Image (tube, rainbow, N blue to C red; front, side, top):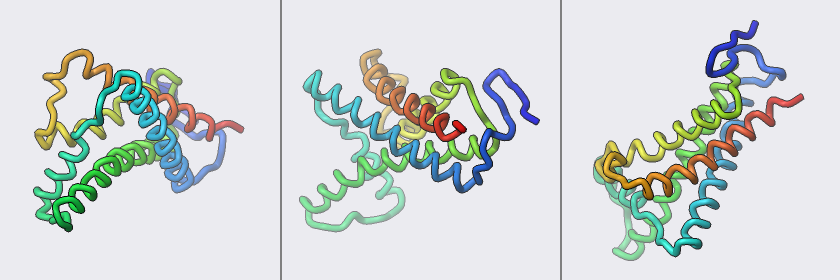
Length: 172
């Protein structure tokens, strides 16, 4: 029997999809959301003529240092590897949050569109900014409003796409 809460409904969905099935659907939704996030980010870069953020690359550098892992290659090759690894951390976070959405769905959690979008957006903001904040690469408490808008809008696009995609998987 489904239980209704202020955040949504917990209980059996409309379809008999396994936990692994929901995890895979969540990963796909996370990949779609990450594509939306990247598209909004790149459109902002084009529109405002701004450069890319260096924080993903800084995250790779700090994580490698803390893990005592060397990124191989001469200076140019190593830098190219770091530039490739930086965006992969965002992709991993986006797919990972999608997997968590799939696990929540497998557990029976269904939310209203605005609630689900907000929860997913907050989840991906924490998943991407949390590690960078914990590693001392950035401090969102010091960001001006313009930086918050630049960060939140693409993550909101992610949340909308993930929530919409997960809901579509639940349709008969």
